[in-house]
Amino acid sequence: GQLDKVAKEAGLLYFGTAVDNPSLNNQNYLRIARDPAEFGSLTPANGQKWSNTQASQGRFTYGSGDAIANIARQTGQQLRCHTLVWYNQLPGWDTVSSVYNRDQMQQIITAHIQNVAGHYKGRCYAWDVVNEAMEDDGRYRNNPMYRAMGVDYITHSFKVAQQTDPAAKLYYNDFNIERCCNAKINATIAMIRTVKAAGAPVHGIGMQGHSRVGMSPSKREMKETMARFSELVDEVAFTEVDIRHTKLPIGAAEREQQGKDYMEVVGACLETPKCVGITVWDFTDQYSWIPQQYPGEGEACLWDRNYNKKPAYHSIVGLLQSA
Ligand code: G3I
Image (cartoon, rainbow, N blue to C red):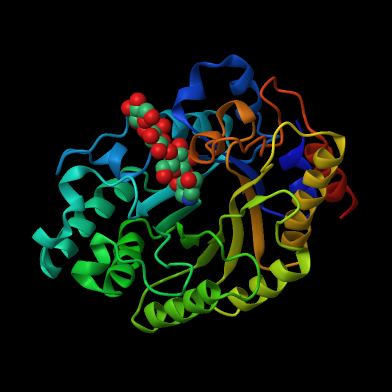
């Protein structure tokens, strides 16, 4: 394996992947996921989310997240931790926001972050503290936390995360904020300014980087966005990259195009001084989330479902080696 090796030689901190729990019994999968020369950083795809860590109120469970964190501990890989406050994959008890007033929601968020970030204290290079708080049209997402607390839920979450794990880099993470400069990007910048002015320690902005072959943002567009984000925070990163085909099956031309599209992402990071690394949202089509969410689409990853490296893999390695 060599993605992380050549990424580090090119000056990045890491090349990482998301790992989900169902794949952990597959030796073909594990051989690659556990190779620190391939992936210098792991992100639990689901294991640290609210539904896995606090399914019933006040009872915290860490088995799924720990299974991945423990791999990283054994191999020396870094952990990008994901995610503390998100509207999705919330357990039933917390989704009926109308029953919680501001003080109650603030206590719920405090307890959740103190427990979960406390459990992983010192082990996360970064935490995605708040995930997907903005809508594409630039409005705040009308989620349970927002309904109870307004934008203060974001400020509060970052403050508690810093008190709980002072060493972790604290990120805001979102999708559709790669291609400069749409309403969501402008609103994200305004939101980060607002919460920082209110005392939120936001260290990083994560651009998820989910996109589609032939329609994904250009390096120039992404660099422009990252330059704007770089004025606000210490670091930026691509946190969930996958580039899916919208029509299957595909041929050689589409495979080559996917490689070019991945190279735009990697190139944008290489040419942005504050970009620290790239994480793919799992590395094999066998476990990609795409077909479930977008039936008929997929083959978004760097390895196919039989663990063959695709042209995109080799394109990325070549680009990193020449950097
Ligand atoms: O845990 C249940 C299991 O008990 C049940 O049998 C099974 C049946 O479908 O569902 C399981 O839950 C699934 C869960 O993943 C765990 O595997 C959910 O249905 C499924 O919707 C969920 O999908 C996850 C998705 O977030 C939820 O929004 C994906 O695996 C995960 O990759 C994806 O990751 C998100 C990032 O966190 C944030 N950015 C977008 C990204 C892609 O959606």
